[in-house]
Amino acid sequence: MTLLTFRFAPSPNGELHLGHAYSALLNQRMATQAGARLLLRIEDIDVTRCTPEFEAGIFRDLEWLGVDWPEPVRRQSAHFSEYQAVLDRLITEELVYPAFMSRGEIRAFIAETDKRGRDWPRDPDGVPLYPPLDKALSTKERKRRMAENTPFAWRLDVEAAAARDGRTLSWTEFTDESMAATRIVEANPREWGDVIVARRDIPTSYHLAVVLDDSLQGVTHVVRGQDLYSATGVQRLLQELLGLPPPRYFHHRLVLGPDGRKLSKSLKDTGLAALREAGMLPADVRRLVGL
Ligand code: GLU
Image: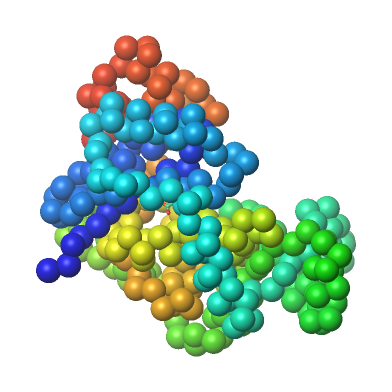
């Protein structure tokens, strides 16, 4: 029998809030119900924004909530050489290309197209898709710019990648947290355009690290917020390119703030540490998030 594995994968770039508490506690509940283990993974590839203090806060808050996990905890920043090896494969297979445009250049390009009456396409988060200019650069020009130390990121050539696979990709989504039924969701990675797969100084991105780690850790069930629902399309494509088995997914509702908006890490009043210091108990947190 395969070991069923869930994971909770926060980034230590801020304090955990009620939304994280809901996600962690729901993972715990669903894992227990499925007879599965629940892993904790620290997603700290952004070495400039992630800190040991925030990481210590994550451990403290989760312990307080009564969530536990097997050791050792996988910390993504300790695995850059593994991500680099996979990135090298994608580079060799010409599925990624160096993208040199700065934010200002992207903005100027889009302003120019918009002026000509064409609305530049945006991804599901509202961010303009990356312009196609760098994809057309010659190998010689790419090498020249790289030798000159022009900053760049590795971007997925989504057209090439999707065409190479050829098939319509999909993923299996549980219809609710009881996991009694599933539905098939069509993956639409093209709606994100040429996403960043790695930065020049960090040999990975969120999407690449997450699919690799889910596979390396034998994750069978991904339970995470609805805000990552359509990003799953990009992740399915990466899994396919890298020959990784896809887990099954459940994207849960988001805990919203009093203003009806998604909670952010800067909203101190919904931070778990602040709630604890104000005398709240784990049972109160469960009630607040509806668990
Ligand atoms: N590290 C991501 C976050 O904190 C979650 C990644 C995932 O669950 O796939 O938003």
